[in-house]
Image 1 (cartoon, each protein chain N blue to C red):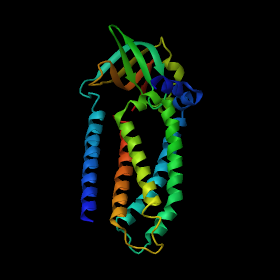
Image 2: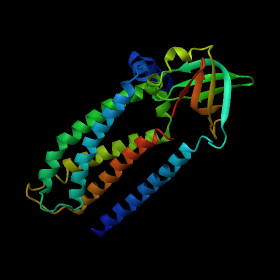
Image 3: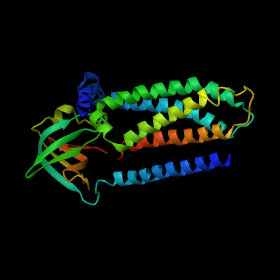
Image 4: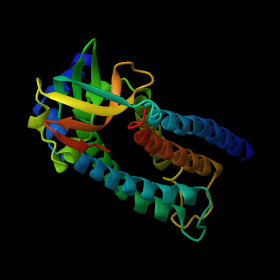
Amino acid sequence: MASALHTVEATGFGRFMREALYAYPIAETIHIWGLALLFGSIALVDLRLLGVGRRMPIALLARYAVPWTLLGFLIAALSGLAMFTAHAAEFIVQPVFMLKMGLILAGGVNAAALHAGALRHLASDDLDPTPRMKLAGGLSLVFWLGVIACGRMLAYL
Amino acid sequence: MSMHRNALTRLAAALSMLAIPSLVVAHHGWNEYDANQTLMLTGQIGASGYEHPHGYVKLVTPGKTWTAVLAPPSRMDNRGLTKDMLKPGTTVTVVGYPNRNHADEMRAERITVGGKTVELR
């Protein structure tokens, strides 16, 4: 595992991410663009699921947000992967990095389960979140706030 | 209903307890370098990395080889500290703070190479 990650670091792309003067800060910037879109769009849905903005039909907002959230995730994942290749073996041994990956997985599973389950059978004009939806919305906020906190802490721990 | 709300509250509380210590630790992380103890070290560069997120030099001093953490290469380049100036064999002086937890690591505030001093923070 460790040697595989050292191989990743030794690739031309890994070297490029470490040594090119502006590749890393550009990737950091793109990463923030991605997570702003990801978190901004999913947070609106999460707050709606928790009961905020009761005039907006839940299914309408939730379905509208999905492609934007996925696009944000894609942008963040690709730029994150680029930064990961620069120091793969160092990242992987950091507990806060593994916690971040775990929280991303939890956030993804939570959202997928919600969309495949409770939201799928929701009438398009339904305004009242069920307890299951509130739980999912609250969990989602906690997971993604945690992801962002872990990402930021990576630079300081 | 109330059961779900309870579970949600408890989970939020549990996760926020994860988040709060990490914020506290972050301050420790910043304080990892002991600013009350200024080091001024002169030696030869044994190895160097002009790389993100931080450059470094392995500084060979009598009796000890230090790892001095520098700044991001984009900043060093901006301030006139080029990759060539950090070649192994070059004599440099670094001023900075020692890491409390890693006895051979220090964070350099400035570095002097060939009569030129560059601020790193």
